[in-house]
Length: 306
Image (cartoon, rainbow, N blue to C red; front, side, top):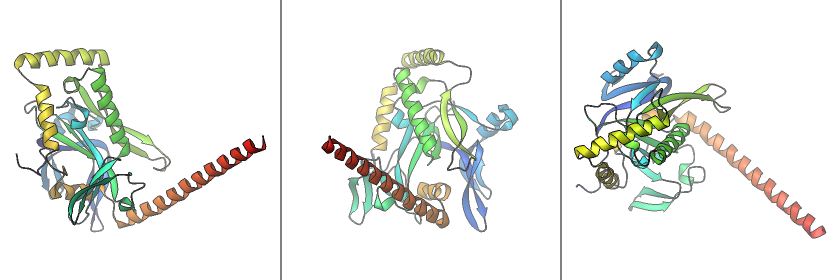
C-alpha cells in the first residue's frame, strides 16, 4: 500500500442540501430545503445529477426529495461518519490543520506536527471562522455496488451532532449490526435566534418509514445471518477501512479541498462578521467569568463573617 495516501471508501456520487451559485461574479454557497443526489461530474451549470436523484424524486411528495433510503457499509460508526475540526488553505484547498478537540495534525514548514487542539473557539489559528467542524458521511444507495458510497459533506453542527448520536445509538441498540439496519437520511428543519427565525435545515438518520426499532433489529439479524452463510466477513471490511483511513495524516487532498472551500467557507465579508461575533462571544464569556469570580468572592466573605 502506498504510504501517505488515505484509502477512503469508493465514492459513486454526492448528496447535498445546497449548491454553489454565481452572484455578482462570485461563486457562493446557497442552501436548499431538499436533497440533491449528483454524480462526480461537473458541467457548466454545476454538478450533473445522478440517475438515482430522478428515480427517488419521482416517488417523493411534490417531488421534494427529503428522505433517502440508505445502508451503512461499516458497523463502526466512526468509519461511516468522519468528523473533525478542519482548517483549509483557501487558495490551494490543502488541509492545514485537522483536530478532534484534544490533539491535531498541523502542516508546518517542518512537516506535519502534532499539537494540542483546544477547539476553534480557543485556538489562535482558528480565529475569524477559518476552522470549522467538517463531517463526511459515507452511505450506500446503489444495491448493484454494495461497497460503493455516496458522500454527504457538511460543516453544520446540527447535522454532525445528530448523525454522530444516531449512528452510535443504532449501533449499540442492534448489538453492532449497524451495516444491516434499514435506514434513511431525513431532512429536518429548525428555527433559532441566530437564524433570525428562518428555518435551518440539517440531516438526520432514522429508520425506514413505518418500521419500529424492534422490527429493524430483527431484519438486521436476518441479513447478518444470511451474509455470514454466504461467507461475507463484515469485521474484516471494518478492519481494512480503519487501516486505509490511517494510512495518511490527512484524509482530504487538495482537489477535494478546493470543492470544500468553495461550498462551505464564506467570503471575506462573512469572515469579518464572524470575527466580530467571535469578539463579542469572548467579551460575553469574560463577563460571565467575572460574575462567577464576584459570586465566589461574596460567598467566601459571608463564610468569614459567619
